Amino acid sequence: MLTYPIIDPIALSLGPVKVHWYGLMYLIGILGGWFLLSLRVKQKNAPIKAEALEDLIYYIALGVILGGRIGYIFFYNFSHFIDNPLILFKIWQGGMSFHGGFLGVIAAIYLFARKHQCSAFALADFVVPVIPIGLLAGRIGNFINSELWGRATDVPWSFIFPTGGNIPRHPSQLYEALLEGLVLFIILWLFSSKPRPVLATSGLFALFYGCFRFFVEFYRVPDEHLGYLAMDWLTMGQILSTPMIIMGLILLSFAYKKTAR
Image (cartoon, rainbow, N blue to C red; front, side):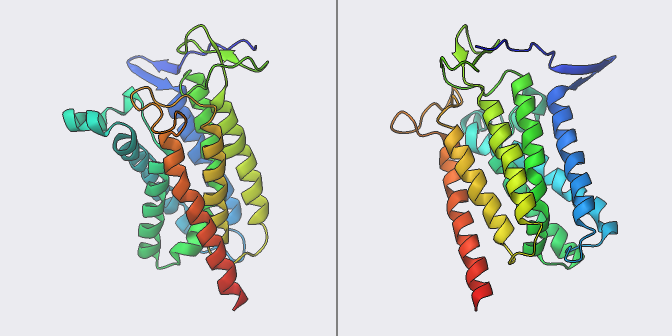
């Protein structure tokens, strides 16, 4: 068993203003994505010009934040929202959903492409290789917050989390940071470094993210108010990841069949 590093969730206090590590991780993810997209926009086949990149980042940041919050309320806490609709705005209490954020980014890409008169499909392929940077940062934020920890285990790399009782647990946040963050980034960055059919990169992202998330859910404890939804193992995360796997396969098939014609 490893010793959990106790880190104050508040990274910086400036009088009444408190900056949390979790919020900083979102900022790091957005800035990291911005930097990588500034490299990709220099490629000959980039769907937008460099001067439009700042506007794209603004759209994506809004999509992540609004989609992530609305998605969490809708997918994971809807009954509470019905009783108290104001919880939608209480972001400081926590609660963001990747799947909601993903839908928010899709909406942002569509709206940006419509405004700038470029292909939304090509823009999606341009953006998705940098999304894992945000996922990596966000899962590290979960680890610092001692939240979304895993099931009880006796593996030598387990941790006793301050909020998880006196029980060694899987560091499922770090599993997700590794698979959905680092590994997925490497796969997509290398894959997209060569010309690919339109929607192939987006399909690969959906497929691998869905598979990685579905797998890690076997080691992660589901939200307490939801629990396991069926068969004592099926979680909401797995239900939401299944359509992504299917969508990824469909997009890849469509992309390469269209190219073969």
